[in-house]
Length: 349
Image (tube, rainbow, N blue to C red):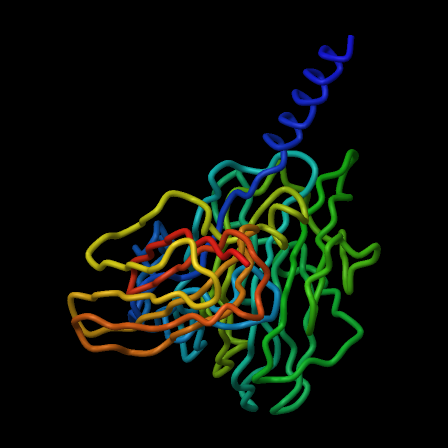
């Protein structure tokens, strides 16, 4: 009987693990480029206008968020008529809720700005039906409100808070699928420090004003496309995670524990391994470019960034002094331009 109970418990846990999953992660691990289009399966919808969504260096940082300080960042300049870019999830969310978390920073708010949106879901029904969008409303040249809009051209529910430019926030957008008609909800959470281990009971803003959708299938980035209210508002988005739960989006770890390499046109070595306090890390890159070397723990959370700089081609060496860190398994990640290699390191004490 005990064995049967153990087997049933294992199957139950496996079912939970399968049903709760991360559906999309984007840390913009690409070289800085004038247009995000066609990088990592991002595609443009609509006509090709002058102003692109760019990839810029460095990436955003938000303490304790898994996507912090990885790769580069997405720049939405809203300089004029520009892109609307889509990226599909690995599979659509058709029940429960879809969660979209990301780091967010507004860099400029000139007087040309009134209000508009920059990131949203798009449903599995196809077409362009942007929903659960993040809206920005200018208050001054240094402050703004954030709100959520279930459907474009419907009411926007703004949070009862004032936010500042040049400060990185953690944003979560949630679309909840509920029984009934016209009662699915779009919610907004904003954090200026810390990453909550569980979903807060009450969002900062929520709305049910607009059509219901059978599910969500894509994340959409908008660079002043089909709107003018954000003209001149420069902002950055980074560390996107989409899941069907708080754990598989907001808390979803980086892919440090996944297979060893995404790209191998550069090499990395470390010794000794295992090591007691200091590890010698060497790497060789084929050309001049941006290098970021970070250490992650076994859970996938970043412990420290040892290097984030442009380096010449050839061999380089760096020492990690791990005296302040507990014994255990770590991952040494090196990002070079649009490539990533991860190596395991065992710290013993």
